[in-house]
Image (spheres, rainbow, N blue to C red):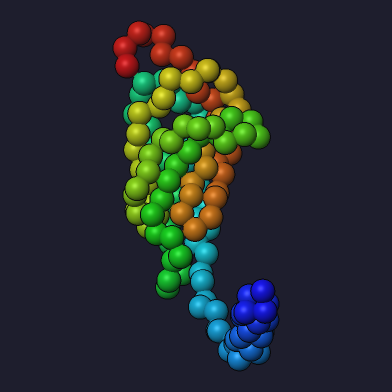
Length: 134
């Protein structure tokens, strides 16, 4: 029992000693790129099954972008849906195209552009394809 107690106190003392000798680490500067979503615009209408594009402003990116890989998600109302419109593209591309998914038609959709941060578009509508082709 004595050996176990001794080992316990030795480990605790060693851990405390390691904390005392800890050196501060300088943090790397991280630039967050928050590009403005240019399209879709408020009031735009997308048709299910059509090809659409989302564009964003890439005119002034920082020198070092923390996450240059983009992802575009669909948002309805206040909730981001589990619908990926596009992914694995360069956030510096400024645009991405995709097929409008089959979702419930409504007028409170927006897109969320992820890279370094999440930017929202204004609300737009998604309507059913009345021609029957998609």
